[in-house]
Image (cartoon, rainbow, N blue to C red):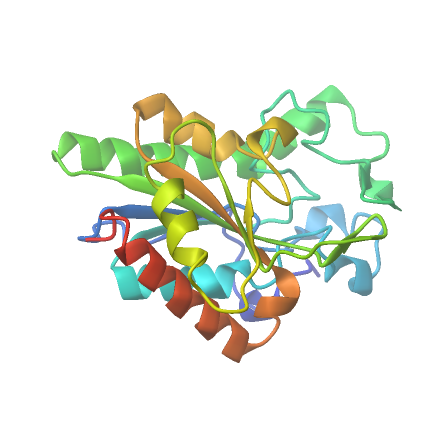
Length: 256
């Protein structure tokens, strides 16, 4: 049986899911590490259930937050339906870690010796459908003369390679700060919240692919949200951060 996040157990496999495609709001929300699903044909990639529940397989907590935000902002949501260990939808097709043989310090046996044919098949399985869906959404809005701004929702681990990460949330951006600037300013006003500006990652780390491909290529405002995953490990935490981020985005002028 394929391995899936709890909300998808028993559901038919979907490589990509688009919700509220005709939403009235400007925002298009991407969640490209939404799922830890591994299709039956790949078994478990040689990993146990505990490893597939870890951050190496997906971004825990990101999808519930993204879904709440999309509902409250009347925004489009595009979410990937497979684990990034199968193929990482937030990486270029020629990226070294598109199909990672090692994630953090964990070897992924099912990825250790894949050939070019299998790599191409994995891309066709999930990477191509995800990006085709984002292209369709944005092209449709452009054709209709409707504005758009793009955000992606991710989570990160509290400790990485033995180093503690102090930030509760980070906003990643390049030199386009139309979204990131107001978001960072608004988040900095929250009591007790440590905010990272291009922390714990930045576009230089190769994690900005989806936004570069779809938003920057079209000249659209964009930013990447990274929430520390212990902050969104419960329903209460997910609701708290969705509320915070909805309020923050309302201050940018791009949420209407």
